[in-house]
Length: 155
Image 1 (cartoon, helix red, strand yellow):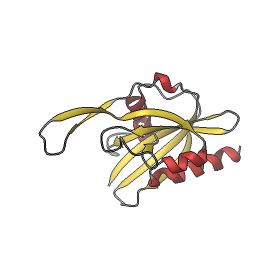
Image 2 (cartoon, helix red, strand yellow):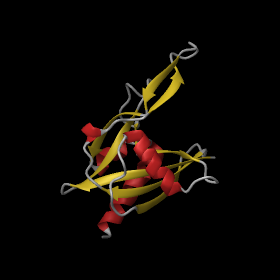
Image 3 (tube, one colour):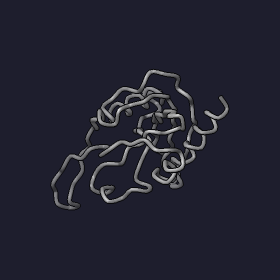
Image 4 (cartoon, one colour):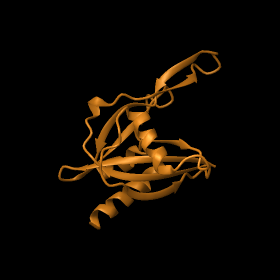
């Protein structure tokens, strides 16, 4: 089992919007629906607290710190493959997507070429209303949008 932790930043204008990142690299370049993600990353549960990992990975993926504010737990989701579990918190904030400076990762590209290339972890970040966000997100993360909307409507 692999473990990831993330932060879903949201704002109210006056309607709720969430900040998502489009997954970087050549495998996602021509995809849109299902190719966006909550900023998150993997951690080793025996070495690190999930919340600390969520903050670190948010900064690594976007090049910006998590906005100051209350961390609202949205709980965990497990991907349908059963091999990955993601825990997410929501934090209210209004980040300027033009300020995003994504981290990079390295992979062999083209496949079997023996050449390693660097790609951005996310190639862009954008704000979406909850309905649009559900379509943009990978299927395993969609329930987190519903949990955020439910938590905010309970306020």
